[in-house]
Amino acid sequence: MRIRTFEEYQTAYQHSVEDPEGFWAEVAQEFKWHKPWKKVLEWNFSTPDIKWFVGGKTNITENALDRHLRELGNHPAIIWEPNDPSEPSVTLTYKMLHDQVCRFANVLKRNGVAKGDRVCIYLPMVPEAAIAILACARIGAVHSVVFGGFSAQSLTDRIIDSNCKVIVTSDGAARGNKNIPMKDTVDDALIACPSVQKVIVLTHTRTPISMIKGRDVWWESEMKQVTSDCRPEVMDSEDPLFILYTSGSTGKPKGVVHTTGGYMVYSAYTFQNVFQYEKDQVFFCTADVGWITGHSYIVYGPLLSGATSLMFEGIPTYPDAGRFWDIVDRHKVDILYTAPTAIRSLMGFGLKYVEGKDLSSLKVLGSVGEPINEEAWNWYNEHIGKGKCPIVDTWWQTETGGILISPIAGVTKTKPTYATLPLPGVQPILVDESGKEIEGNGVSGNLCIKYPWPSIIRTTWGDHERCRQTYFSTYPNLYFTGDGCLRDEDGYYRITGRVDDVLNVSGHRIGTAEVENAINMHADVIESAVVGYPHDIKGQGIYAFVICENTLDDEDLSRRDILATVTRIIGPIAKPDKIQFVRGLPKTRSGKIMRRILRKIAEGDTSNLGDTTTLLDPTVVDDIKAGAM
Ligand code: 6R9
Image (tube, rainbow, N blue to C red):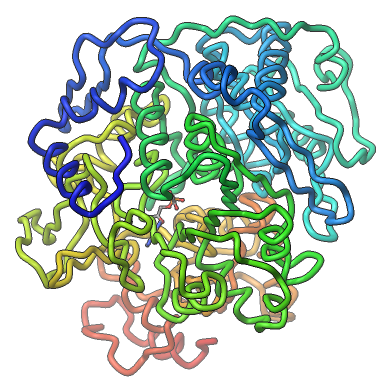
């Protein structure tokens, strides 16, 4: 299963393409199955209908916890670093984690959760988030983790869409010098969610909160009522493991569904190979468990591999911009996996926060979430890796469940800004607008994948047709990623960014349509159009063109009201960086907004706006140009 040399990578890759079923069967054998699969793969990209390890029975927590108890029982599974550096960190061994997961699984059962039920997890970055996730998987409940930065409205939408029965939350969250309400937000969200029967509340910040009789119970007192005996539910390989909502180019976020067997095999395989994890190493992924990166590379991938996963509650700039390096130094972190936006932001604070920190434990550096620019890559390489740590620029998506294109640390020759080569089992293909394959090297096109890998999206919750439409209909018989991509002369892949209306702001995926809908909720707004523009730290910033009824006495106040509205509807991560009030939007005669023009204006490149003669009213463009920010 483990690739050690480039020759081994080539052999594994070839094997995976010539005999995918044989290849993945071998990998899957490392896990404990209650019943072996009858067939490795059944697939059809047109419906789509994809099944891995068909008929196989397993439980992912048995593989992530029980399987390690004999050899690694006293080995750290999770190291938790709190927001406040003066508070002690917490270590949970595999035995302790197993005990807590089983107990909380029993708490869920006690509160009416059964196999197949959906449980919403809305927690800060505390070990209990991992415990709650695994407890769901233990009893076959489907977890739906919602990122703590989303608003009550977003939480409501997600709870309703997946019809969650129980919510797990905390009183509050500590982030930097802020205390963020969690239970309050849940209370607001629940006004519109009749399906929710129980709220399990972890005490964390001890902020005063409301506790409603019959509905709200405390995590701690529930845990005292149960034993740590909880037999793992035997799950079918294709039983849903979790739902994770993500933004697309249209409509509300969709619930991406991952299933048990394939996700288990792929998250573990990619974790071990991409990062070349060795026993006793400390792996620090700085993502939030509310995103796919946290699911696959804080919780499942590392624990399935018997690794030690470091979980950090706080933010990279608290108490100062040296916090990551301080954590690396104190916990002797071997592998650091973070996002370009964090690197760019920390770069901006200068080297004084890096100096004096002992980073000599680092062996591998990872990057994820957005394209990494050359300057950030070089800084990461020189000042953090000291020129001796391979950088793995890992490209993947919520829908792919695990890393698809990435160097294998120390094995694949890296090149700044390139995700380099597909992992075994991954068959990328570039196509032009008409869907024709673009062959050869030194070319670019839209990135698709032509063959299933074990953790490919199975459906979008409650709306299979939407899954087909979004990913499998643009180009027949291909999975369409939504990303543009270049393949250079060496056959190396470089992801150039989204080709659809999805923004990537500080590594967070946000749909322009979602932001527009939120802006349009403001009482004075008539219409809006949102585009991305290059932003030095965030990668992309959000630029909103807004037609407003009566801004005009105090534009700044109107801007602030719009920001507050977006925060209320989606959450602070979707707040536009720039709001320009306009009298009209550039529309074609059929009423379509010409975003190409708005994008150019937002980028500050108004010299060549292309053909504007097809516009209903070409003069609005001059007005917008004149008022550009
Ligand atoms: C894992 C994750 C997915 C989108 C994806 C792409 C961008 C992710 C990248 C990258 C360039 C990388 N993206 N990794 N772009 N290089 N190494 O981030 O999932 O939140 O679903 O975002 O992020 O545009 O399509 P998700």
